[in-house]
Length: 304
Image (cartoon, rainbow, N blue to C red; front, top):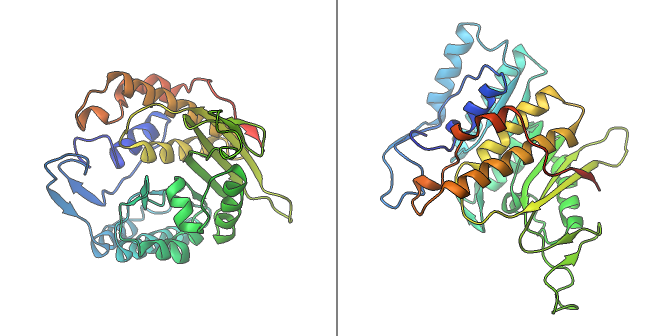
């Protein structure tokens, strides 16, 4: 994306601040993101073009030092196939490369991609990923489990683990009031973990698949919902997760805290500075440089 803090623009800068040398390929080259009322202009990369770029990298022996692959929006089955070919090729040179997949399907009940891609992600993309970072809508599409409670989310994580990824990070959930029918005069209810959850609370869940048949390890963070709609949040979350997980691969709760606390202050700053235009809703990344480099401590991850 150009001139908008979404896509690679939202992912590359934070990773560079965290000390990573990032090589990026834009799957689209647009004038602006789709949130602008007058549409957009630009080009979409196809799978063949991506494979040509990969071939050039391979011919020049530039794939061996790749340690992580991060993917975001992939709008067609053919492009998904090309991305998987890239991952498979890189793994020939570095079998330990980690594939972090943000399975961009949609949000708020709306698809951003053809619904047929759900099956593609289920059958081919997710099984190759080491880390997957869906939002609530995407989890529900990928697993068929409607998430209303933390128990639902736990089951969905288990199903995603069964597809392949060892780490599942549900980036945002709004849990239903489980006691609404019984306590109509209240505005919040305790979920199965005894945590009060209201419609103004966002819940985030991280799950690490355990070995040797042991139960999966899960942590959650609950934080206030900041009003508004902001672009680039999924891209930023996935990049921060990759950056911190690479530094602390055995401390998922610490990684979770750094990611969510950074996200919160970035979104809060964007909210305070935003106006009514699509441009004003784009994340204030430059203004948040210090917070990206030095994550604050606001919310603590708790095991469940």
